[in-house]
Image (cartoon, rainbow, N blue to C red; front, side):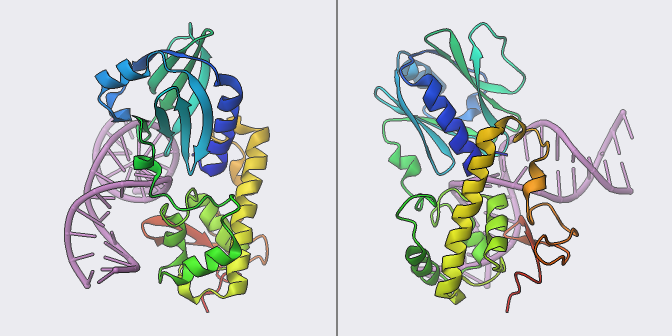
Length: 267
DNA sequence: AGGGTAACCCGGACGC
DNA sequence: TGCGTCCGGGTTACCC
């Protein structure tokens, strides 16, 4: 399941491979993948567009084209695959962009949660997002004040993309454990020292993810040994790697939430 | 206003 | 085998 580090890695790879290529044709194989515009308009507008830049904003992959922005959100099960144009479409391919130079970019998405936007106004999609957790503007001071401007449980607040953009369920649990903060702790009860710890933990787990996936992205979506790196996520009943206490799993805002009741005491 | 939860979209995994 | 339930990213609708 692609979270921010995986999306970052995909965007970097695509940037290295696809800048300068022209989109010859779009093969839309599952029309609901398209958030906007209509399939007809999409095919018409994307034809002949040149890819000038590829980047990431939150968990969106942003393709800057000659006169539009193509935004792709992979959600749960989406993946972007570079293929030769002669390769047959694979099961669960939702959109295939045929490019100049004999390559194709395939958006493959088993669960059909992922969405694609083609728009001249990307801010309509990206405008409400909070700051990037790895950008210079995300500082311990900003986090402290932002936390105190709300009175919300830390876990749902950190998952709120308008508060901070790009944290998903796994990295939120990991960051809270590293910062020794209970997921239900109220945001305005966090001390300046705790905000500093949380800030460091968020950047640390994301950077760790990026570093890891840069080396071996292929198993990220296939299970493999990904879970061996988790401190708390998906480790219910297993010993905390810090203190040995059994990791607990609770539901917070309908999300599975994992924490160490000893390291992350509420009081 | 600002907090919370439920439904929604999906298919795979898993339990019975 | 087969049916029901859970899971999850993020938005929207709705209630407190």
